[in-house]
Length: 111
Length: 318
Image 1 (tube, chains in turn blue, brown):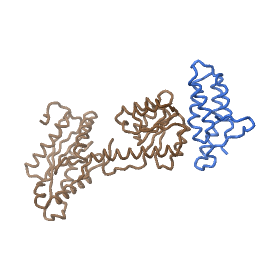
Image 2: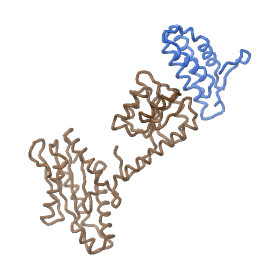
Image 3: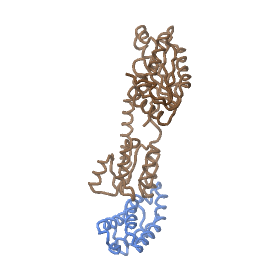
Image 4: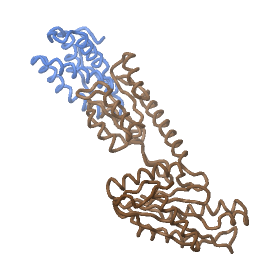
């Protein structure tokens, strides 16, 4: 699991940082991450659970492909937890997974 | 599916990605770039189905977990539609449990790749699915082609003819059919041997193909008999095309028998608009005309026009 301790929390680089074919794609993926973080924030504050689950689902599928397996794993953990929880569960129940995902997304860098 | 027997391998295989995540589209397009594919994408199930019908992809990569219409429903719909049922589908899914895989295969998927996918693995699975599809197409095409002449065979003709007649009836389009029979073919075989007879069949096939337009369907019906479906063609225009075939064959020099010309008799039956005739009755009319052509001197064409939308004028061939 992508749970590093606070002291090592620097930027996360894509596994494909040195792959010329992927450079442009990784860059655009990273450039769009702040928008996703914002979308996660607003889904949480407006209590839109379905949207949050979908955002996590999409990151889970896409992030590893762009060389960010830790983001994928954090998104997977959030999605799985939400699927197992009763539909009536408050989103605050997933706070630590949400925070973890947002933290990793905020630290992703393309080089 | 229509395959052109003269052009069995088309250009780049078309691959369709149906996935609600644009990230996956971008990623796959970049990763599959080296594979020489024509990659298209749709972001939801309905758009994917629509695109599949339009572009006839050689392979579909389908996500299962999509909002509104999920991948299972897309797969089910693809397999129910004649136009898309033979397209192989690889499931690309984040759902990892065995039951999802079983359901997908039960519904007709050819492969299942879990997300996040390993790109090297995905590439070989795509390649393998495309190779299989190519072989299946080649086999089904071979089974519809006559070995000696390279034209469509009788089995293909039977299906295609029924389709064209119903299209003509539905859309009131002109349609004509010709039955062509080489004159005194048995005597060519008996006099110059079977290789000479085969050469005549092949020469005739070449002449037919040269005279045909893209929309025409030339078939070897059996022995020395050929049929030609001329779509969107009135009997008057069909006559012109058949006359070209007749004179071209008559003017051909045969290396094995330079002193012996080969001729053909042709019966044509066509309709300028909507027609009530059944496929059998229609073909029977052309056959009757061929019979008349043979009876009245050979090396000629007899053509008739079927009545437009008036019932009872034609008796079914018995």
